[in-house]
Length: 158
Image (tube, rainbow, N blue to C red; front, side, top):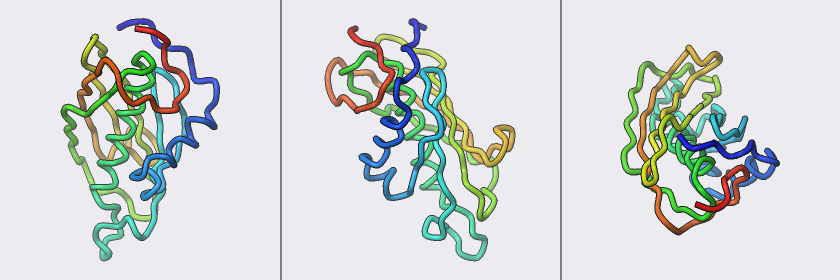
């Protein structure tokens, strides 16, 4: 894997950019930490995100959005500035229902990066990382030009 970009200079810029993404704003995703080697986001438990009112468990779609966003952001943190990124494949294994009333964290990392594809893994968990609710593996296509998100920490140039 090429040398990772330096750590972001402004966590506030990263956290603030989440509100620019409509899906993140809709479910209230919050930035916890951003580094080239790992991104962590938080999905706060909210009653309007519950999929089954009897159990109080957050809907799987909100967890999918959390994991896809974590994977996308950690990919953007590892590709040269100005390159586009698109989800090619996203596989999620739901291991157990999330505990009602408890926030869910999502942590992701790029474990292999080629010129055109990023291979990413992530986990959604509550409390400790070992308390996984879901695991995710994903691949992202890296384009030659495109959208430039306002996220710190990307490498300049090719």
